[in-house]
Image (cartoon, rainbow over all chains, first blue to last red; front, side):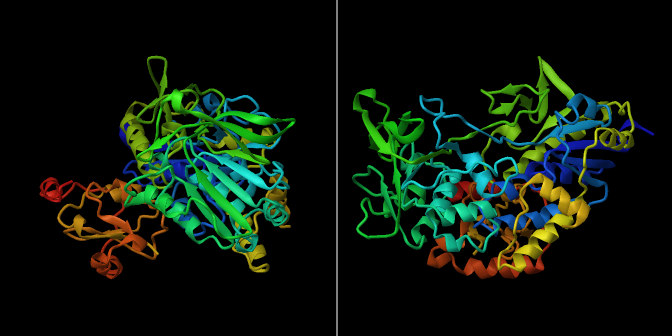
Length: 442
Length: 101
C-alpha cells in the first residue's frame, strides 16, 4: 500500500461550525479518512446552539447541514471529552494521523480599564452563553433589577444582547431561550438600553439585517445620535443608523439608544457598577476623529454593563497563543511551532483566524485547513497506538463519552418538551441533567 | 425572506459565494448561480464575498431587480446544487471591469 492510499484517522476538536466543516472536508476527500469529532460538552453545534440568538431560529437551521455531515460514513462524535484536560493533545496525536483544533474563541476580550472587575460588569460571550443555556454560563445570574443597561461595542453580538434586553419577553417565550433567562427577563426592570460604540456609524461592525430588526421592536423606541451633519449616508449600516431619530418623542415602555465615539475609560461605582466614564470623540463623516484636544469626558449611568468588544482564543493546554491571545499561531491552518510547523497539528475556525465572519466563513476556513492537511498526508506517520485503545482509556478515566446517537436522544427530548409548551425547544442546561436524560431517559 | 443573485452574476460566476454558504443552497447553470430560497438561512455571508455585488437581501432589491426573486426560485429548483467554488467564466474579469467594479 502506498503512503497516500493508507486509511487515515483524524481527530477534530470542537463540534461547532468549523469542526463540522473540517469533518466534512475530510470525509468527502478522495483519500480514505475517518473522523472523530470531539467536544468538551455533551452537545454538538458549539455557537450555533450556544451563541446564535434564540430569536434567530432560521440561522439555526444550519444544524440540518451538520446532521447530514454526521451521517457521512466514517464520522463519530465523542462528546463530553475535554481535549487538553481529559486527554492531552500529545496523547491524542498518538492515536491519530492528525489533529485539527477547532474550539473557537470563547473568552471575552477584557475591557482592561479601572473598575472592570466590579459586580454587574459582564462579557458579551458570557451573557450570550447565559441566555442560550451554556452549561458553564448558567449561573451568571445578571442583575436586571436596575433601569439602565449599557452595552459596550457595536458588532452583531452587541446588537443581539441589546435586542434581547429590549424585546418584549413574550416574543422570546416561544423560542429556545434558556428557562432561567426567560424567567430573569420576565422579571427584568431594564427600560433603557444604551449601546456605546467606540467609532462612528461608518465604523460599526454590525450588519444591516441585524440592525434593521431595531426598526420594528414592539414597545421600544429606538434612537441614535450619529453626530451626523450634512449629506446623509445613502446606503448600508450608516444610513440605517441615520434613519433612527436622534431624540425620542414617544413614551415607549422601553428605549434603546445608539451612541458613537465613546471610548471607555473607567467603570464607575463602589462594589457594584453605577456607570461608565467615556472619552467622547467627535464624529466626522461617520468616523470618530482622533484628536485628544477635542475629547470630552462623558459619564453614562448604568446598572449593568455588558462589554461585547471581541473574543480571545479558547485556551487549549499545550497550544501557544498568538496576537495577544486572539488566535493560535498558524500558517494557513498548520500550527506553528518555533520556526517551523507542528506536523500533524492544525487549526480551523475562530481559533485560527479570530472571531469574525458568518457561520459559512468557517466552511471556507476549514476547507483551507483540510487542503493543507491533505497535502501533508503522505508525510504523516501512522499513529503509534490503535484508535480503539482510546475508548478503553476513556473508560479507565470514568469519562461518560457521548455519541451522536446519544445526542439525538437529547435533541428529541428537548424538541418534545418544547412541543408540549408551545416552544421550538426547551434546552436541557446542566451537564448532569443532559447525562441523566441520556442514561435514564428522564 | 432570502438572499437573491441578480444580473451582475451573468457571465461572471465567480462562485466566491458558494465557498462560504453554510447550507450549500447555491445552484448553477452555464452562466450564473442561483439561491434556493427555501434552503437559504439568511446568514448574509455570501453578500460581501461577491466581487460584482450581485447578491442582495430580498428586502433591499430595487423594483427593477425584483423579478430575480422568482428567477432564483425557479432556476434553483431545476438546476444542480453547487458544493464548492468553480473557476470564474472566461470573460468574468472583463465583465467586472465593464460593470465599473
